[in-house]
Amino acid sequence: MLKVSVYRYNPETDEAPYMQDYEIDTAGKDLMVLDVLELLKAQDASLSYRRSCREGVCGSDGMNINGKNGLACIKPLSECVKGGKLILRPLPGLPVIRDLVIDMSQFYAQYEKIQPYLVNNEPAPAIERLQSPEEREKLDGLYECILCACCSTACPSFWWNPDKFIGPAGLLQAYRFLVDSRDTDTENRLAKLDDPFSVFRCHGIQNCVAVCPKGLNPTKAIGHIRNMLLRSAT
Amino acid sequence: MGMITNVTSFGRSGLSDWILQRATAVVMTVYTVFITVYLLTNPDMDYGQWLALNSHISMKVLNVLTVVSIAIHAWIGLWAVLTDYVTVRLLGPKATPLRIFFQLGMITINLVYLIWALDIVWGI
Image 1 (cartoon, rainbow over the protein chains, first blue to last red):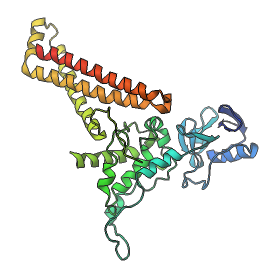
Image 2 (image 1 turned 90 degrees about the vertical axis):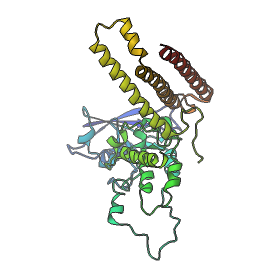
Image 3 (image 1 turned 90 degrees about the horizontal axis):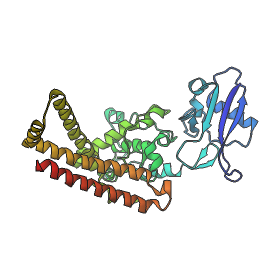
Image 4 (image 1 turned 30 degrees about the horizontal axis):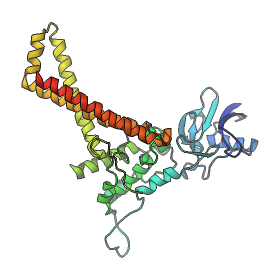
C-alpha cells in the first residue's frame, strides 16, 4: 500500500487548506503519479486536478511532487516516492483555485508580455520565409517548452515578483523569438527587457533547470538575453 | 503592460546594475586578496609600516576604489532584497511607504559611510 498525502482546498467550504491522507494499492507496479491520482479520484470524486494528454505534451498536470515540481503523467513513483509516501501539492507561488488546480493568469500575463509571436516588417514573400538549417538549429532547446509552469513556480524571484519578473518560462520564449532569423523586432524586444526586474531578477540559481520536465535550460537562455543586451548597450 | 522603471535602484537600468554589481565584486576581491596576502606575509608589521602602506598613492587609489565599490554593491544588493521582501504582495498596502523609508535610509547610511570612509582613507 502506498501512502498518499494530498493538498486539499475548496475555498467555498474550507477555511484553510489542509493535507488529506489516502492509501492506494498500486499492486506493486511502478505507476506514474497521474495514475495514482486517477485511482484517488475513483476513491474520492471531490478531488480536483488538471490533466489532458497523459504523456508530457500538454503541460496540464504540473504539480509539486514530494517537494519538487514536475508533470504527474511522466513522473514514475520510483523516481519520487520517499519512505513509502507520496506528497502532492499544487505548484507553489500562484493562487490556488481548488486542490491541485492553480490560477495561472500571472504566468500567462508574463508570457504575453514578451510577444510570443514572430514580428516581421518586411513584405511577405510569395510562399514562406525560409531559414537555413543552421538558423533553425538555434531554436532547438527553446521551442520545445510546453508552458507547464513547473520552472517559473520553482523560482523564488518569480514568487516574490510575479508581476514584474518575467520568469524562466517567459524568458526562454523571449530568447526563442530574439534568436529567430525571421523576426525583425529584436531591438524593440531588447529595449523592453532592460529594466531592473524583467530579466535581471534572475540570480542564476537554476531551480528552473533542475525541474524542467522537458530537460530545457532557461538559465542559459537568460544568459544569452543578457549578452544580447550587453552587445547592444555597451 | 507598461515599462517597468524604478527611481530608487542605483543605475535605473537592469543591465547597468548587473554589470556594476560584477565590476564592484572584482574590485572588492582584489582588495581582499591583496590585504590578506599582505597581512599573512608581514606578521610582525608595526603602525609605521601600516601607515606607510596606506600612504602610498597606489594603496590610496585601491582603498578609495574599494570603498566606492562597497557602497555601490551594497546599494544594488540591498535594493534587490528590499524589492523582494518589502512588497505590497507580501505585507499589504503599508509596504510601499515602508519600502521607500528603508530604501532612502539604506541609501543615506551608504552615503554617510562612503563620505566618512573617503575622508579617512584619502586623509592618511
